[in-house]
Length: 365
Image 1: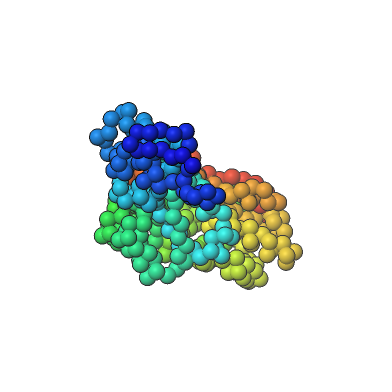
Image 2: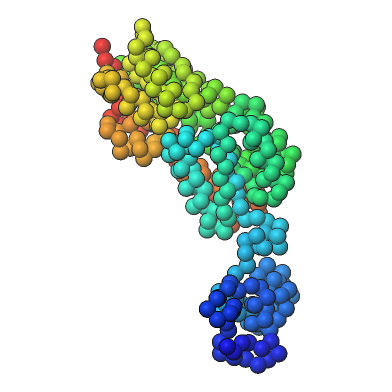
């Protein structure tokens, strides 16, 4: 078969590989096709300069003809960038798949990263803190990512100091420990906006006549756990109601079901539940319904997040909405800015708000 002759004899065809056994083109093939050195091809595709416009056009045309593009790993080595962002979630696969909260965050992040030419590296680490520390160390020292996105700040969170030591840029989704606030790059609605939504939820229940309310949340070490509960309880008390039970769980369905059934069987059962996320609220509704306890006729329920699953459940879930997609998009934008991409403007975020649907009603007698 005829081939291109780098010495100047052109042909009409360019074959790669042996007859019946094609292979992918390489940078060597592109250089030979264009009649230049491999370093010239590298300079063009890594924007190093020093190549005339005519030669650059010929190189790019050869690359198109051979359907060749530089590999991501080669580009990373040449540019000292991986074009990859890490997202580390402190959940195991079972809990993650049971809660669409994180799927919405991942989707929002990808909406920013993909058009910007970045990939996302996802890690689910559960509760093993040594595993987490080792993961961040490998991500930084082995140059696997350019920066990381974090979720669920803890009281006395050690991650900032570690990432600062490793020189790994980061952005936190959600409000950090107030004592650490100035050290983090944070994406969250303002605390006053959260406060307004929690107060609205508490007043909604007291306006319906509820005086005994239970609050079911995640682990106490999470910053948002204490903040949400305090603001919710403060407004309940102000309006003559009582937070009769405070339960801290690991977000698992099994713990939610056990805790809720135990409370309704207790000596002072609540007439309403407030949950830290919609997934726990929906699990509770299912467990209560199986016991013949009607929602909202017998017990009212409020969730948190405004997930699609709550919108389409029956009855529809009353919940506190937060703009998960907007938060995720803005977090990705802030991280890319740290990495040198200043082309993206800020993402507008809707403030948290109470969404009233069918799972709240007048307190039962």
